[in-house]
Length: 94
Length: 368
Image (cartoon, rainbow over all chains, first blue to last red; front, side):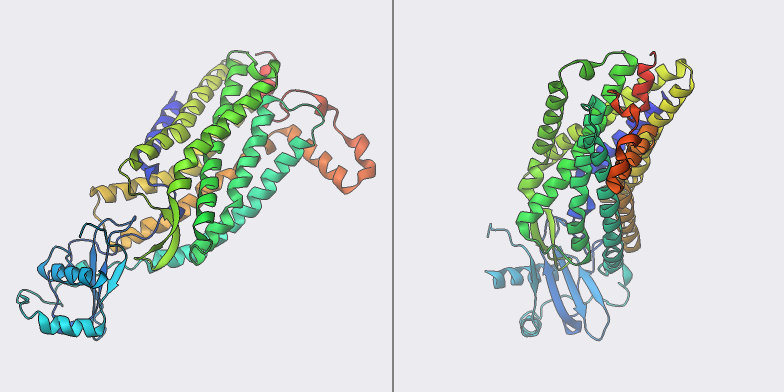
């Protein structure tokens, strides 16, 4: 009955995993991995994006674009600077 | 402020200026841009998205053509039959219809992968539900076929063939009804939403209810686990019976049984292994990083394509492995190609009432 066992194992894998649905119904992942930086010098900031939780990523993300092509940084959303930015963004939305 | 904020807020240059001037109290002493490099950079999903943009439309169009042709051929041959369909043949016909309906939605997903979902929420709900209905129908009909064979081989009992054809019809109606019920949540919760992180609209679930996990678990049990266990049990019993008996026909019948299960496993196992890795990363058991994420995304695209390929394989496995199907196919093609000569070329075997293709059924007729 090794085949039966194999199929049952397959079914269990299936059970553990299919709950997230087919990839065609999925959107993008979270953009930030890990905690992110605590703060960024305001003088270096070119652009700030506050991205709210969506169906595909359940955390708030603050992404900062640095000046002079230094790339982007994820700001730790729990940090003091991020909190001020998030509050500011909320105020502007309402 | 209880209302949930969604979307994305971008600060303009003016706002930035006011931010810099109005908040001089930040403590930046600990901050240094250069040493906090790579770890804190956002993950660009460009690589996997670009891969999907090229790969998915190609695979989906291929599967669309193959699936329509293969399943169309099966349906045409079955419907051209003069005699009443046997129970296995009826299930095979429904399976072909389910597979055809599933591949019919693939062009929409191809456009979704190449650009974004441009068809609106209504079509998102309908296409998503149609996809899921036929996915479940495929699994449940495979289970029905295995149960039918199990009864006829192991118990030498022909539940469907001797009874009124209404019994088969009822089973099929029950299967489709169950599938519609299972896909109802998809119809309700799917919608074309703008994804702020991808900056594009996609057809996705808008789950906010806490009960959605329970719902998906129910779907999983009824749509996957049940058919899989039924198949496993039935085919294991069939194999044990066929292994005891000997004979050329039985060996062939066994080959078909093994091919069916192996094909199902080969098509769907890689995808579920990849999703398992993704789930492990979600749970934190395996650490996440950008390149690993994009590898998983690409692996998911490739293996899901392999999984959808199973609906193109069904006609090949269930039909083309059978010798009689090929005969009938040629007969049908000859009849279509040169109508004058079609009459005499018809196979005498087509008047037999048992399943034309499934050799396990033949094995059962030949003395089991």
